[in-house]
Length: 222
Length: 222
DNA sequence: ATAATTATTTAGACAAGCCTAAAAATTTAA
DNA sequence: TTAAATTTTTAGGCTTGTCTAAATAATTAT
Image (cartoon, rainbow over all chains, first blue to last red; front, top):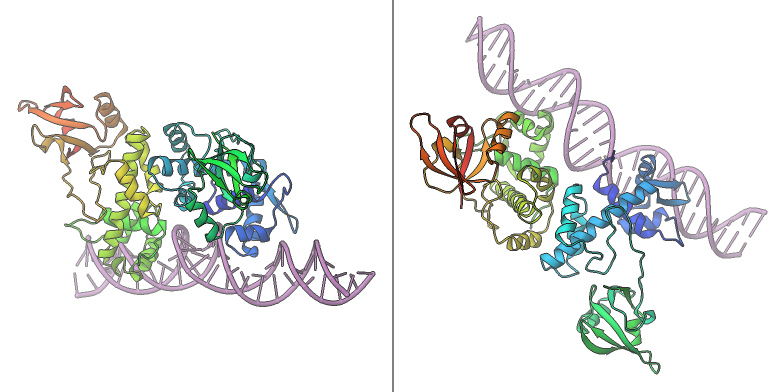
């Protein structure tokens, strides 16, 4: 009984998913427009169509959130996106910064059998190369544990999942330190004097400044 | 300098490629409409747009054929389609009859790097699971050698690539004999009395009737 | 509490890709 | 070689997903 959804509609569902949280359960058309790279008026149009299809709950001037069925669809798309990212990085040896645009296309391929077999082929991975959890076929997703490295627990395997400051300078500095999205990090010691951290990055031990730690997000890794 | 082509435009280029031959270098809008599952008027529209983009050569009432650039684009799409079919069958263990619709979607993914790496991952296959040749990155394609099994040479590795009679009865009978698209066949003997053939199918020897041999297409295999 | 500002929606337009119905060109047949 | 039948194109319309400009609601500031 699955109604067909266009790639564009899927992109909106995904954007709404990413822009709503427990704190802010509803997202404005303006914010969504930014996320989608479209004008707010276009978003209003689309959101009204999605509302008629019962994929979102929308109240004029009040913002929009996913319905239960919309949420399920969004998770299915995210599942496909992240599985393809695993394929691209683990099997085709792409690097983390090359896979997003390709996965963005692959996530719209419609075939449940393909998704199932891809997951099996990859060994049913639990997280993507960026450390983000992959929803199950049933639509369950492990709660996000994204936190600043500064606040992360000691002696726990972590995966770098994002940055607060995304300036080229910072990213290039990260590269120099051997840090990138998906890299495995473990905090060994916290220096009280200057807030610096002794960390092991892909099994090599080094010291990083608190400024880095304040701008780097990590997840609990495997 | 690659102009963007929509999935729909790509489908038309592919259809024109498949429907033109050395004998009939031009295809009519009506025939193309059948192939595309659209009305002739819609085809005329599209073909005129493609002509403006110099992807096809079109003369009113005279039919359409690919331009050189159109031909190159068509081959690139066919390359992607067939590479994905290899992936689906060899890596994800789909059967030959399940892969077409999925490959039809995957062929539109735009990323040269992806195609290159996929080809390398698969070991640069020369043919797809149906025995059809995979064009090279440069747009070279091995000439088609499709022929009726009845007329095929003895003691030569062949691959089943299609059927003349596509009735369910025939296809089910083929299944029973262990014959399907992509199956390796070699003709060992031709019986003059009844036209039957002694063949080795996936290394098992059996005799098949001339009626089968008259309705089965094979390619020179590897 | 009202005015000014900002956010949001509505209205009207456009391109892509399809459709149906009607017109025009081509092919076939008498 | 002209008339009938068929093929192909044109004309006009519809949906999706976008846009700009204008109107309206909500928020902020005085």
